[in-house]
Length: 432
Image (cartoon, rainbow, N blue to C red; front, top):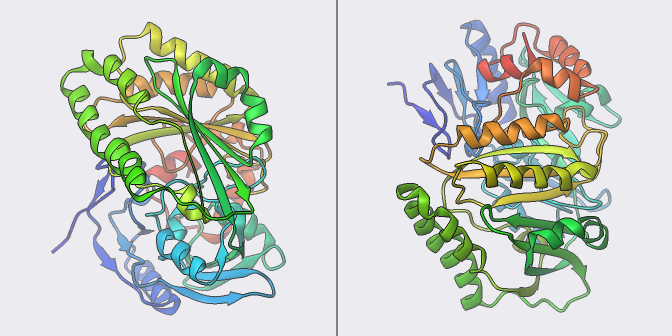
């Protein structure tokens, strides 16, 4: 009996012809070869945290939950090689036990390592970039069932693209990440007026290794977060205070507020004013993944665009003006982060220092009017949408905003000429 796969947000569902749960790269390669013989397209799903249909298929759906664990740690090279289906939360905990850490990461760690990197998942950083930018080597099964390895020295043209490969070049089976000795970060969370954040944005970015902020629409209020390396000692968030901020206010009470706002949209501005003042200032020091990441239990839909960092203040002012003059009622804060330029072909930060503006709506709330209005602003500033988040852009747009777009599609022609890994989403964003 066929089963239906759904993503985390409930925005995508697909019913594959069959599923496979390979426990090794060889088993995965066999599954790909059999799919080719039967004329089935192939997609891999991770934890389903992409809001787009990037992983949907009516052919063979590969679930990588048996492809997990650390293959090896190389302390001389300071790398770790991990199976592609390993959840980031398991990788983070395993590295910490070994006295190691990734340099930077996003704020959610439910994703698999391959799913997170293939879609360009990122955190915020002045000097340290996305998770994919920390990759030193990749292993993937290509359309003919062969196992291809790549790095800066081996198949470098594949490495340049496959770190954020969108699932279009093959199925990733293992990833080698750069790691470093575990370190401490001091997090300083502090409410701040939006006008001050925008006026001081360049200084806040320059003075902090990791700066981000959340602006609450319908208010002039923000919550800011500054993470910087610390000599210690460790001083984790207190259990009670941490539970109040991270679970009660950020998840439990916020869930109730969003539910009320969905039923009574007119109440959203008042709720936003209360929500934006709920979290008070706090400072704590802990190992990286306990500072970078946080639980996200309130379901939502999201769109995120990367714009040139120098444009982000103007972009935010335009978004605020648009919300203020519209009938929209927005219960979720707008999240703003940064990244340095990188050299990955289809990275949203490829070749340019970037700022990310993410907009969210509570699941079940109409979002298209809001997202369409925001997207219009982003595209006017040469914005690049996150590959795993809702957007309407297509290959013609990407050929303009990604100078190396042709490199990627030419590599795809070589590795997957029959489009075994294609689906409707990839057809839209990459063309035929």
